[in-house]
Image 1 (cartoon, rainbow, N blue to C red):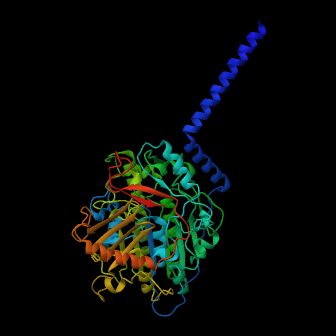
Image 2 (image 1 turned 90 degrees about the horizontal axis):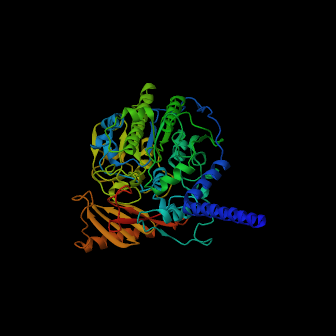
Image 3 (image 1 turned 90 degrees about the vertical axis):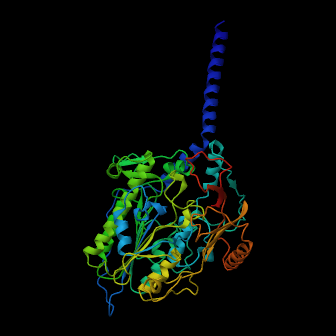
Length: 558
């Protein structure tokens, strides 16, 4: 009898064990995406440890030794994912941006300033080379190999009808032999930093890069004398007592960022270490120090902020300062991030003035692309339709300012379309030198801004990301895609917010723009690496809205 009882007890224990293990496996299966993301984050942080903060010492290379009038300093301040409506000089932003507004008042604001692309890395490649990035195969944003598999897992439990398409890739796919770290700006391309250094400029980089992560593709191999590099993507540690976080559960990639990103930077190729404070302020602190160390010579400062890109993190001080008149928590955090950017612009300008060099400095302020839909805020690109990762105006029509008191008339507005492509030739013209590359797609804007030339600097701009492309020519804009097969046409002189597709009404205009686009494409190079996913981007809604498959969307290759 006792033997039977023991067997019964063992059976109950075995059954309970099986039940517990099965439950664990079931929970693990249901949460497999989260487990995969957590594992990737843990492995990444273990492989690339972050040390304590260390001081950054910007080298003082001495006084300028040239003859005649000293060339102007060049300062490019680039934000990440800043919407057209995020600056208050455009009218209806979340908060006032007085320092950015003052920059616009003291310089030239471009009513039709365009990003090179609707995504960060390709825009940066164009800004620094003055060339369409597709000329040298930089067509898609470099992403880790784990990107598509993680998305595939996330899609299994995601309630949104995304209709994401995953493309079959194998070891024979073009460029598949390149690791994520090797995907970047080819070393053969000549950058603005290389050109200016050859002219005798001191070249300084602070912030984001996203143009390759192996040594031969990092800033110091691409023309920068010194580089303070953003090595991950947190503005402060998630549990920092001074941070206010806003997690967006409706955004797929937001879930990934909170797990895999770290709080880290590095200087001149050295080990990773913790920044000293909130990332936007820290980069500003170091930019101000770099200006002070190089005030006696012409310098090029490329201050590439991460803000206001996700993850949404503000300081408690900024969160409190913007007040509570916002529709939700994330909007208030985002407003705090914008306040930090505006403060950064003010501090950089104050540093230039303090050292008596602001009048002879060309300052360029812009964003790498339009505001992103995955933060769930409907008006950041107002009045334009679309978002980052689309070629609607919301994805490419960005804040754009140039200030140079010695040459540019303050308080003026330039109406003709200009582009990130124009930054390099304009900066080189200011430095009284020319690009070495045989073919530059950008235009020197100085003759147009000083009145020496009249009219539009260019007739045509093209945006291309694989099968999805757009062209703007003499006031007409055409979107063309293969998946889904679709052509849209807008008369943006009469319809700048792209509300009325007139493709059926003007077939001859479609034919004309198609020929221009085909001609452009024939001169581009094949992509150096593949894209693995086509992501739906809704044109008029954010992921925080009730989205259906009936809502208008495009498929963005990534």
